Image 1: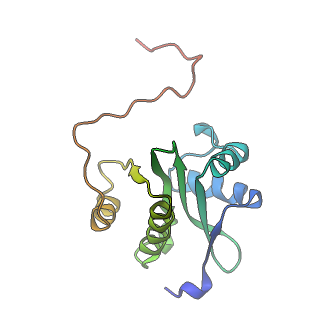
Image 2 (image 1 turned 45 degrees about the horizontal axis):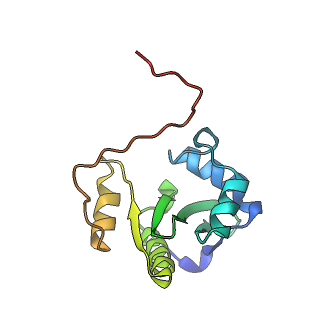
Length: 148
């Protein structure tokens, strides 16, 4: 892959629509997860960052969103459009993300689906360690009742 045809930049509100399309296409979420431009801008204001990868025609082909609680950084929405996978782009994007986190001097944590073996290998190759025996729970909608 020729990286000169790709641009990695910091998030701008004009990227939002393309990001939602990417995230829905590669199953990272989108509007159903509550991702909004306002939330993204707020996480950046609070010390996070969202890196956006675009091709030469400005199509969003990758992303890496880092949020922080000022104790550690969280890496999420890290993904590359399928036709760009295997090109080294994920490594480049992860390196940029880790550099950002290192500059803040904070640990970095992520979640990855247990069946996403390529991503798991990538993260392990960059020093991520399995946290062990933790389950992840979430409430997306406080108005939903627990299903029987």
